[in-house]
Length: 210
Image (cartoon, rainbow, N blue to C red; front, side, top):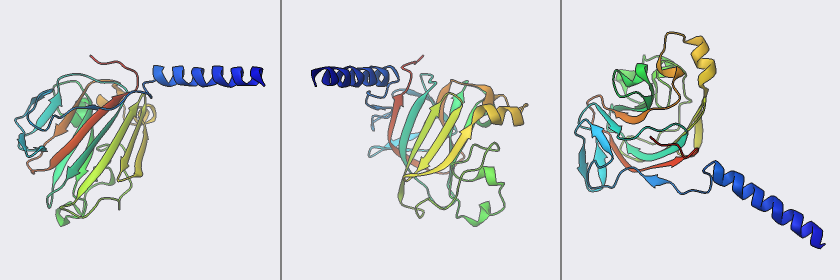
């Protein structure tokens, strides 16, 4: 019995050590203090009542990240359009120099004829996300983005809407520079609409931060 307990204990410790090495025991870190743009640079977004309000174009993190879980709440106005840039090198268009995950009011008539890979949650012009899981305009949504090596997963309000393999996408989109990148800045890609964000956190999976 003692031998079995020792074996179980050793296994449990091993699991904890592996989890710790992957960053799975860490707690998410806030990327937005609700007061100002500390930790961010670029466009001069508005901060009001603990909410980040889009009022410009590209607002990016001051640090670069590789593998992580990025979570946030967002609220779309009617016809709202924004995006989350990942692996952005700091210059050029985030959707091409890096990659952009759409933040979009799918229900608005002006977006009725978009390509499938231009709707909410999609990797812009690379891979389409599932539709039908956005809350009505004016209600807060929660989104979770996992970037782990070549894998990019988007969960919207608890439902997985995108599961992309960047290696496969790079093979099919050889002229797209951003899809080949595996690290960079995270950014908000403003398009003029006052999309709101709050509760912005990151959990690094590798512990690598530049």
